[in-house]
Length: 153
Image 1 (spheres, one colour):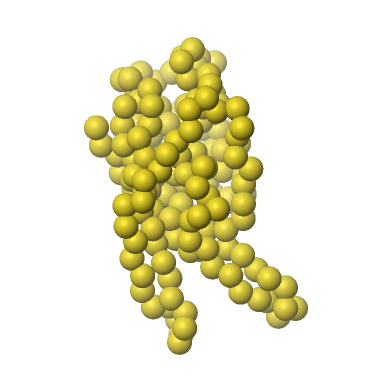
Image 2: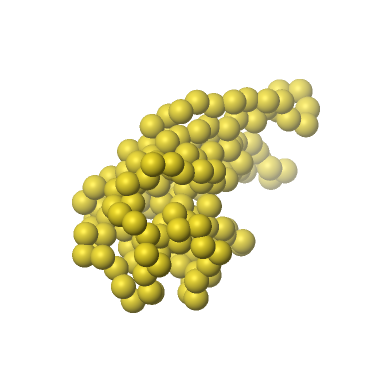
């Protein structure tokens, strides 16, 4: 589907069971490469519910990686009160999607952090997005951040 810059009150009929209106507008904006639209901040806040400064790239990755979020890299540790701290909070997946996105693992990389035994992990996934007929490459790090880093036909 060619991106056409839908207005906020428009949603193609075939998108109703795949994405919410906010998700569709974010994806349409991302694939069109446009800098933004009126209501973008509201759509981002709805889609990326826990981030202080949500971005379109983060929102796209969260929409597309929803199904495998429990398998993405995460960092765990204990704070000074011995409470368990997890970097990636689980988000509830939408159950009413007619077609589920199926991210395909594309590889990972690891490195060393600030001290002995402190390493980081970044995983890459590729996801085909119906309606837009595009593949999106995402990057997920163990600090709980997800980004869409590119797309192709």
